Image (cartoon, rainbow, N blue to C red; front, top):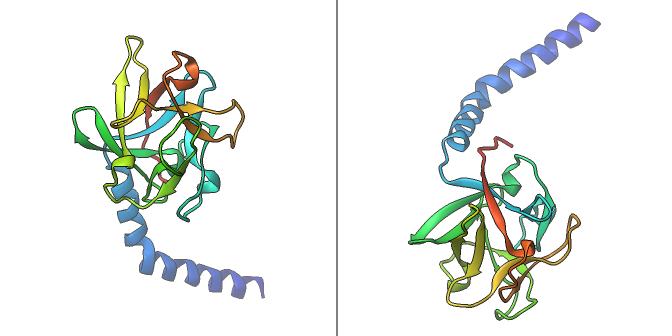
Length: 175
């Protein structure tokens, strides 16, 4: 009986590999070779910008979360011009923007890539190799609202604090 179950399972595994192995490998190579992919990590907390619960739905909150080399924490930087980028999440294939008209204290949420001007972010390099991240054509910067996991990322005027300082960690996650 055990031998029969073992061989049945072995056949299922072999069929799975034959049917989907090439696709899985191709997906792996594509992810491995994607360029300009980074975790965006807050200097004060050591935590990253992430889509809440790796949610796929539009209007999912953008939050602070402990660093991992996961797709849902990794953003592909698509250059618009100079130091201005559109950020595409590797897992959801979406970006983020203010949840309402850009003002102080407004949260960020996930939206499809669409070239909306509120999806363009200016990365302003500082002397210590960190960045301030400003919503293009505004004076509002990406800011942490608290130091714990799942706290909202918000927009605020310049504060000259570590709440608004970010570093980029290059990563190429597979999952």
